[in-house]
Length: 86
Image (tube, rainbow, N blue to C red):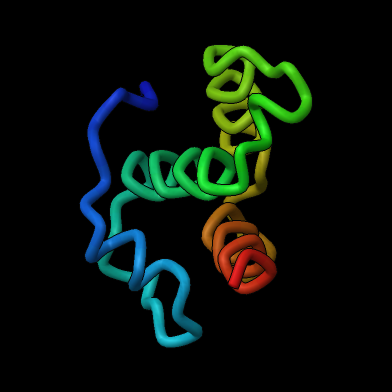
């Protein structure tokens, strides 16, 4: 799985800032891209001198090491992160 350089549209970035955002139709790879987008929107890579590839590796490792359980899984992690970011 690879987090790409795909551009996330402005409409999706705005929807991502809403409490009504629904992560359920998104594939895991897309959620990783949206997580990256949240980090970039807050300019965290610049503020903390984090190389984009280091961020991508961190996000992927977090994804890869989540247990495949019904609730406390990667999707739950995404939803919590998304709500914190709004």
